[in-house]
Image (cartoon, rainbow, N blue to C red; front, side, top):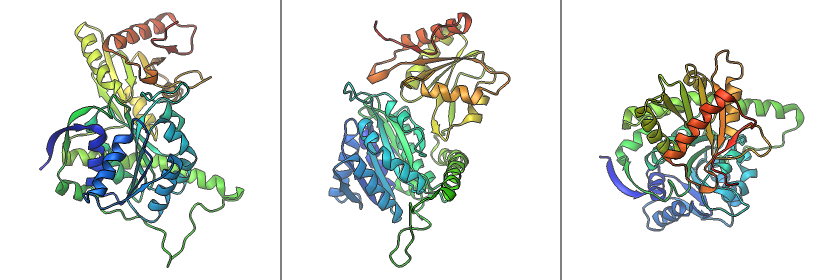
Length: 391
């Protein structure tokens, strides 16, 4: 029977990887991800998890080891953060191109310089186009649930793509929360044994990631793109199945008091919980504001976004990363692209805030909404607004 236990979110991730019966874990510790792989190392050393734990010398090597393990048919997991994610950047493209169902927890951290161990989404945004499925979570329960779902999605023979499950550094990773861990008997029917269709086998040799001359490269990349887009159906189906079994449902875009809202705020990650409280406060004061929580970053849920904003007059997007030299924050740029050809679309305002772990409070969200509404009415000389910067 499922139990609700108070534990650190990073430790809970390790427990879920154990319950998912991972075969290989290759990782290099980096703040604020360290507690995840530290706990997994303890589980393997204590005999609680029958897996191969590979302590490598860098994140580049961690992902390289995961490639080999996954190609051999092993259920494979790793975790990283910030600079570590960027160090393995080269190999991320290889994992998705070779259709290897690696699952990775990414504890989001700001990128240097200056050196910061605190959270924002700059590391994730830098990996936007690597071909990985990317899921954002806002609390410990969502992280644990989506780690389990990620194995099911990635290993589905219609998908066979690697997945990043994002959680905000410290604000989520190091928090002790009451988390429901399913019983092992409940997990086993939901997550079948990994059945990778063409694993490396000395008696039946195959070539993976082979040379790609010009006459096949475009077709290969287009097939990869189409497969990533089609994975949306499987993702939604797995989330539905998970909800039917465990009572917690997830969607690519989630709504909070948005059905009749004239003004919508859109967030990702842990800020969504604070934003919900701010929305409640504004609603109680008579302001017609709602919230959209973007859970699925890749493949981007274009149609879901279009439906979600169809009745709104204004959409205020808060990014936790800069797109240096760009017109908007990276998420807002995707939103604008999704809505560009829509005949009836809201006025869109782009904000960037919460960089390097800086908090966005309830009052801050109220200020952002008020400022955003003012911009929709009076305009602004800026392409986007940076919130909270000291001048």
